[in-house]
Length: 166
Image (cartoon, rainbow, N blue to C red):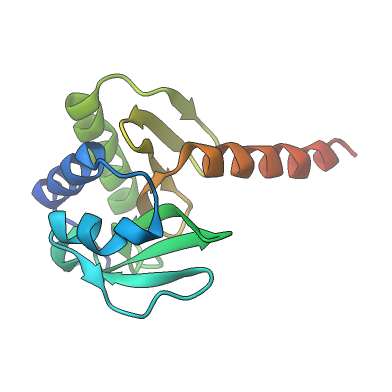
């Protein structure tokens, strides 16, 4: 039996459908109602940089992260795997990543970006922002990001990579 845990393919499909169908302005004033429509709730009080969400089977841990910057929600992040240090962790992570890519493409259409590399990433434009999956080498995550936040993250990554030419 594998020691790595992962959200099931049906669970991934359910999560992708919820995130892709979310209609939200990213306003914190709407957070509780927005979460409730997907069957989620805040597990912790809202702090300056976010909150932990209780999301049931939509995450391997039952929890997700809400990130906040400058008083605006910017990202909902769900871990889909854990225990990746297990011998079969790489295979399970690749399978989960591929399942997310397939399911999201079926649900919302072709990706808007595919970013290969050590931490492969796929993105899809959806109504409330950008749906993203990343295999960071330790776990696979799915996020819904506000477009302006993803633009800022991309700028920071580009600046970081400029120094790699030395």
